[in-house]
Length: 270
Image 1: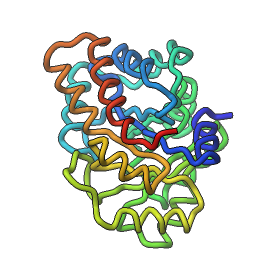
Image 2: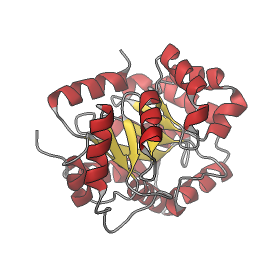
Image 3: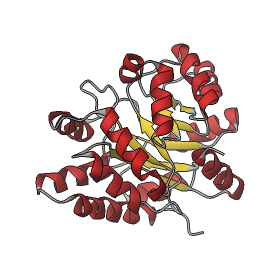
Image 4: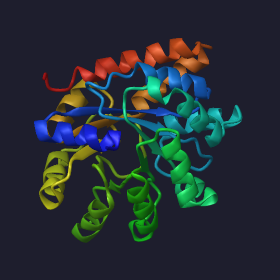
C-alpha cells in the first residue's frame, strides 16, 4: 500500500491527529533535504511535504519565496533532488508529498513527472496552482501509479467546488485556513472550526489544515478540529536562518527537527 494512504488510514481509524511539516526541497542542497527527512519522526508526523523551488510561486509567502530564490540561485534541479531522494529513501521513515507548481509538471509531462516522483519515493503530489477543472488527467495518472493527488480547498470555495476538489483529493484534503499566500500569523481565523466541520461533513475525508499555523498553540487548536496540521513558513524561516549562518547539513537538520518536535507538543497525547 502507498505509505501516505496507509498512514492516514491508520490514523483516521484510530482518531489520531498528525503534524505535516513542510520544508523547501534542495535547499541549500539535496543532501540537506535528505538529512532533514531522515530525522523526522513518523509517530507525530504522518507526512513531510517537500516544496519544489519555482521562480514564480503563487501560493507562497516571502519566507518560502526567499528559500526558493536561494535554491534556484544555487542551481536547484528537480532531477538532482529526486536522484538523492531515491538513493536514500530507505533511510527516510516518513511518507513524502511533493508540493509543486503545475508549470513544472506540465513542462515534463504529467505522466513523466509523476513516474519520476514515484521512483524517487514520493507518495503524493500537491499542486496548488492546478485548477479543479484541469486536474482530471493528473489525478487519473496518480491513481494509476499509486501517487495520489492532494487538492487544496480555499475558504472562498463554494459547495460545488468543494465537492469537486474533494472527489479528486486523496488520501486527505488540504484546507487553507486563510485565503492568499502562506506565512506565519499571530492568530487563526475565528470561523476555521466551522469551515473544517462543514468540509468533513460534506466529504467524509480526512482534513489537514495549513496556511498561517506557526506555534504549538496553533497546532493544538487545529488538531482539536482537523486530522492534520500543516506547518511551513515557521520551519522554512528556521532553515533560512541556519543557511544564513553557514550551518552544515546536519546542523540545519537539527534546527528544523528541533522546531518540529516543539510544534508536535501541541498534538493531543496518545
